[in-house]
Length: 203
Image 1 (cartoon, rainbow, N blue to C red):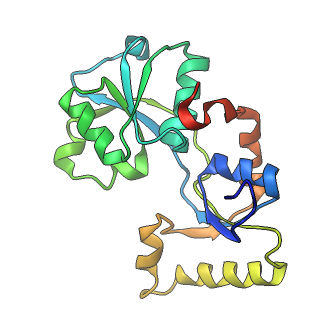
Image 2 (cartoon, one colour):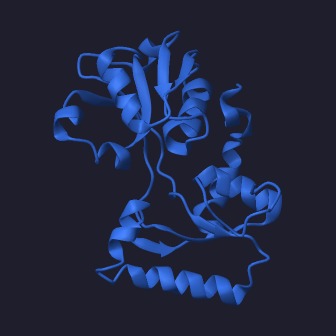
């Protein structure tokens, strides 16, 4: 939909922000202040070195999940030369449980998703590898949305940060510390990653 420009507002992952900018000129408005970190998890007694994952089955929430899958798979393959089978498990919670059950040797996620899980689950997992940090998911607007309307929406959402009755709404989309987004600062650096070939899990 954002490729065609049929939607005015879209909440998208960091690399989709790059793709949407190139395709239609979408403008990021707001994002969370905390940086996004992709993590690769194993059981506590699992592999100690990333090379041990070569030729194995790894679990991911979905092909285009940025930190948990898209960026992670690119780093594992291009920087570490690993070959592996990707298994799509639909949610971060499913990834954790598949790793714990031994259905996959390792699984991709992001730190902020893992932090929401019960301590009893987290205590069974260990981080084997982390991606570099990146700006998290922005709410973006198509350029046909006027600059005035974009500013009004941005200002209204930023005020939620100081409104006790509105803060729970921000928490549901993991924007607890909502701030203004800026394409050049936050997402343009991701252009050099050239992750398009990993979109859809067809690599």
